Length: 464
Image (tube, rainbow, N blue to C red; front, side, top):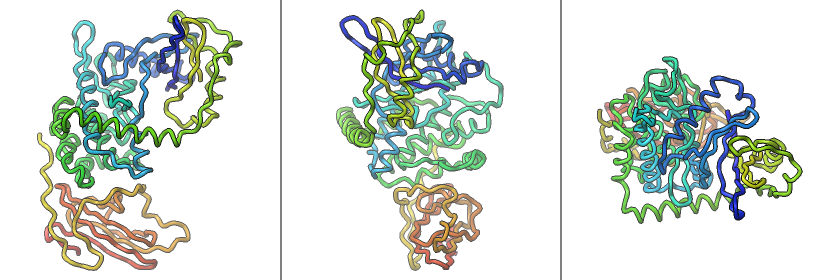
């Protein structure tokens, strides 16, 4: 419903502090619903002051265009970090992941406990924790963004309303049930899992499939498939991602303490955070298109008038369009540097799942390998089993006698299982994971025109 720009204020002595200006889009400016969400975000943000939350500086309007002035955060969103790590096979260190989670928990706990000026609890729930709403700074700080669809005492909402981002909603949130702070804990658990797996947990799934998988405790059951280096994190994430809210951590502070227990001393953590950020940032800078420089004299001829708040939104569209053409159209945050007249702003453009028992040996058979945590996932979609046009293919029949999930090259294969499906000829890693975390893995070479059947029996520990 809005765009975010970089804004500068030209003050005495040539000082030009930067801010982030969130401007409601004209298409939504006349919608009472979106205006209410926009006002709610500004109202809540103005009452919360915490180092792990983006701070609201001001809220105003100019010529009926509403905007929020926020602190400018120099950093990278987790969505950028995860996608960069996936593209360049960059492993996100365990300590970095835990520290990011710990700081995010501190911000969430503060928000969950926040009260108004009269001391009354706000009952705030962010409701949209996802990789693009968490930022990491070069100094190793973590900031939670965007309380735009948050739920709290200050907002009246129809019972049964489903709001959030599919793939990050808690099971109770996805079906419109009453939610509490542990819905944010669940969402953060998915974000941390995706940092370790370097892929989305539910990418490509339809809403009804996500809702069904959540009801089957899929999020908690998939945790043991992480690489061995993240094994200390498994119990923590399984508890955060428990199907029932009462089985999760009681508070975000409890979740943060569990992550903190996996961290070394603060100096080591700070150095690891800074080093990892520098590595990702260097990659980002190499990949980022060169931005157009906007000079102050370009705005010299544009007329403007200050709004009562000292902000003006005149002339925004022309410069925004110029910047978008420079190659930044795909960025979530459009960054524009622009200095306008003295003293005036301008915008341009209850317990976790049991620990999985040790894997037992797989009976020897051709192409079988010992049970192990599946290798780093190869990104596929639910339709990945469809044959490529004109490519040689074979048939795979996969499943388990008992209830279990089946993964093909690290990506969940949508049920029903036990039915033959066409796959392109090639090498496949098949993993079968039971609800209690037991797993078995087999490597298969599927030849064109060949049919292979693998049905695992956990009770007798053998392939049928």
